[in-house]
Image (cartoon, rainbow, N blue to C red):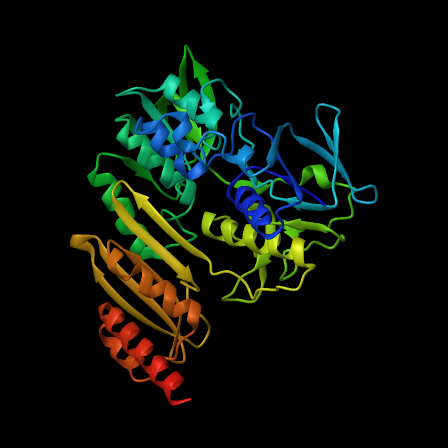
Length: 421
């Protein structure tokens, strides 16, 4: 049995290792597109700052790790898929056959269609090669304009601030990290960044870029002109599915999969940022471009590749944990709330502390927090288990920062119920 995995990120590596545990005698091939060993994009900021060398980004640090597991790595890029012939054609012209295929190609950074976006010294920060370019072209005091203050943008922001560049952030939404924060939380993150000497322009877009004797002139919709030595674009990503045209694999925002991570074509699976898997909170199938989901997808896909789709799962929780220049923000599940639900809020802007709880009945279905890391495990646990809080829900509506007490009470109640049964 030959398992071919297209991709080399967390979903791909987790799946390969899990396949080896489940089937010691199978053949496993990992197709790595970037010409370097499998690495984590989440480690790139540490490389940008200089805390680690490029090798520190690798997902597995031990030399010979993949060889020791009998996992073959091929450095090339997929260009097309023939599902009838069970063959993946590579850019080099070679091809790889498979018995079972896992597509874990992740996503690619996008750029807005504005004048000058392809100038030299306009970079993404999505790959190890991008990080090398940014390091080579920035130093303390370099003028840097960062386009985008979403999740990825704020991760890059952290590293750039630590490189001590002169940083301006331009974000088209009215608040930072709008896909995981409400207005009070986003405003606090902006105020925190500004207190660290970072200029943040929200509700603003870049309209054009122009090279003036080595300086990049950045024009904004508000009429303000900024000067930059380097511009970094963090305005969004798209799933890497272009090479699947004509394959028969059904595509939407990503690759459509079922609860076993199987696609609409037999013996073809998908996992990670490219897969449109089930969201546990909503029941809908969505792309969750986060590393914890990628790891869960990888394990689940590998299990079903071996056992023939006998292990479905009801979905993964959408969660984000972000460090923005030392301020930790989180969001879990339906953090924006549900129709007919109730909300509890705790806020201390002067201390950059915020907690928001979202209820459906007496069940916590979503939460977000800022500067209050003590609750992270509790929030995730309550949302994942769907535990009924009973009278504690009313307590939390008045005092949401007692969420840890409510979690313990819920756990004790569940234990008592099991004992009684």
